[in-house]
Amino acid sequence: MALNLQTFKTRTLTAIVFVVIMLGGLLINQWTFLVLFSVIHYGCWIEYQKLIALIDNDYKNISPFHKYGIRLLGFGFMLWVTTDAFKIGDVALYEIGWWLLIVMLIALPIMEIVVSRQFNLKNLGYSFLGLLYISISLGLLLNIRCGPAGSKDSLFFGQEFMLVVGEVICLMIIASLWINDTMAYIVGSLIGKTPFSSISPKKTWEGTIGGAILAVAAVTLTNYFINDAFISALCISSITVVFGIMGDLFESKLKRLANVKDSGSIMPGHGGFLDRFDSLLFASPFVWLYVRLFM
Image 1 (cartoon, rainbow, N blue to C red):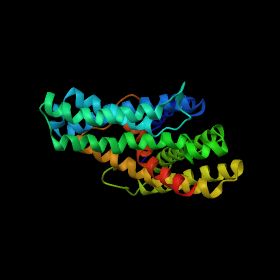
Image 2: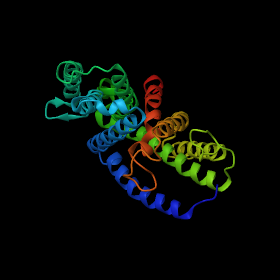
Image 3: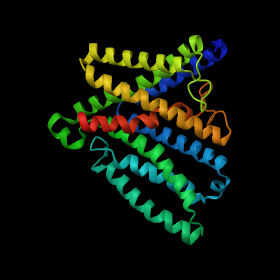
Image 4: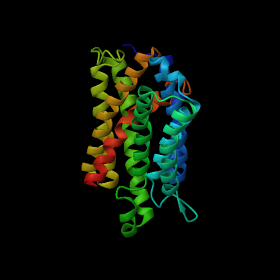
């Protein structure tokens, strides 16, 4: 597969703008992180529901309350898994998230039955899949940002220290995905010959393996020299890359079923929110498990 210079230029220019916005949200503080991924959460839900409606026309008939209520339910989960690092005065966001979860869990089925007179288990299943795919994934990433040991250990280590550790872990995840995506595209364009999967025919084994190795090596060595954190960086980057590839394939399958090229068009050369964050959505829960079990 030859390297398309115009496509590469478009992708690069878009990526520069994207990186600036992402780094601002990632690095300024935990609040900009929350705002950034709240926007991403909403954008992913819009595209996910459009894709599902194209895959199954019956999903187009869901009520407005179902359509927006399920997004609010997911956002409630994101707020619920935060810690004391997110407080407005004396009110912690996880308290708001908890009540939002409870209200929406009660209101959604009632509104479906009483008001909309709809209770389609298949459509509810699609929405539940969206919660797993988008809301829980981004919620767990937000939980990682709060610090690997959560609010209890922050009393011992200090809240600021825990936030810095969480920030570093999130940067490792994002960096692993960015490097893997870029290097896989370059390596695959230059030497790729063997198709990786029928789901995503443009990807090659050469590009996939090359991108994965370079991403893991870059993130691991950088963290080793800066933080002397070789094992953690190796594990986090490896988990991120492996499950990130699976996330990319999953979203490609959704697009193939919906018969569309991109999930959206917000980022020229990169597609939509799901196109850009499909890998992150799959990788985040497994990195969270590693962080909670071993860090």
